[in-house]
Image 1: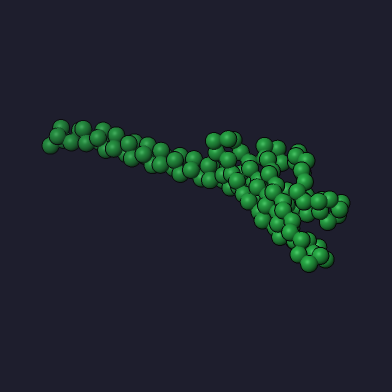
Image 2 (image 1 turned 180 degrees about the vertical axis):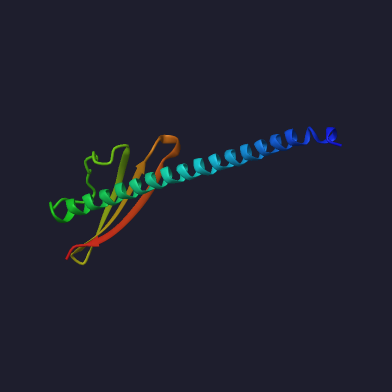
Length: 125
């Protein structure tokens, strides 16, 4: 009776090794997906900050410096790898100027960019 059961432990060990290998592979996949999500979140946050910075620079140019709309905002060097595109329009109504500013921040590589858009409306007082 003992001779019929000699190969059972070998099959059991191989089965356990296969199951543990599959669990390890699944854990690696979950960790990889998690790190990709964190990287995308960082790019998205940087793009939002770039867009907000562009809108603030345009508002500063209009109200603090006394510039006009549209104007060209110099490139930002603080956000490496990001670009900002700003569109500005003004509409005079009854002696008051109303401004509409759209700022788009882009961060990341060309094939996988995060883009965020910020719209600001303001008026002279």
